[in-house]
Image 1 (cartoon, helix red, strand yellow):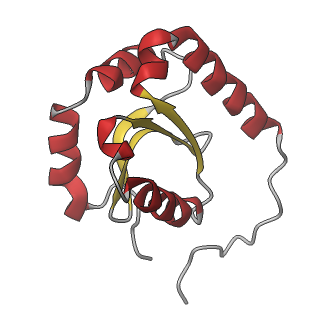
Image 2: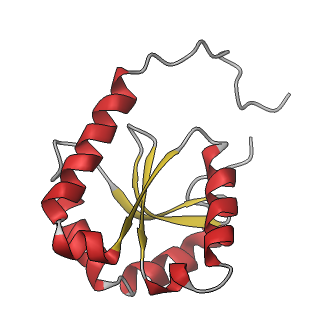
Length: 136
């Protein structure tokens, strides 16, 4: 089976991104790391295929993206939308926050994340084959 999560080929990119977090990402990570949010484990700079997600909760399959200035230049919204659509095919749900939201309302951001996790865990997953994802 082909590995799509945290592939070795994306390791250097993830490391570089972890070493160059924006201040908003640093602030959010300080609240998420070490099961700091309702005992849910988050990973930072987690890759799915060739894409790297800012923060990811594996148990909830929840991606959190922090949209800084680079997300508001021409063409960025379209690239973000395309990237998100591809990642969502893996059953991953997205939440997006701007730097400003994180700086000005970190408690509200955290509340929204917790609320979203609760919603995700209240949904009964559809039946899936035990062979799902295997190549035969």
